[in-house]
Length: 167
Image (tube, rainbow, N blue to C red):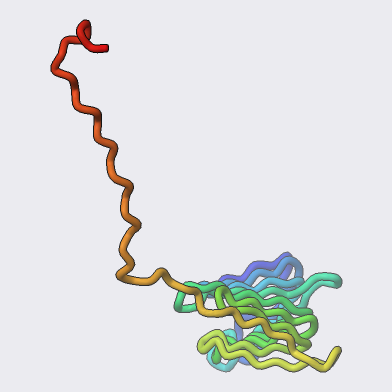
């Protein structure tokens, strides 16, 4: 995982937590997370097992990833918890997830499995999770015949008379 921040405090040691602060960017393959602060949980094998990303006041933490079909998924929320072992992102507070070509979801808490694209959600503010599911894109019909081209204009037959004799 490639990590950037204004400051860091922690260890790359088993069973520790490292804190990144200020313009945090975490990238792993096509997965990218951004926020103001991140807490990295390092497991007993010194692997990043979990990341907790927090947004600056008035902003949202962000996650994005390109799925196996080449579609972009983006998500924004007050906080973002990412299970790096299982590929599960939990977006909490003003959560929105957009799935390119598939739709979007809004709620107080959205859970997105980056491996299966499964989405679950809950809402406490208005009691509902809002989803928009897009229809499958239509592809042109196969075997359709192209429109017939208009007949080519045929030139008028040339006169065999010399131009001086034509009227």
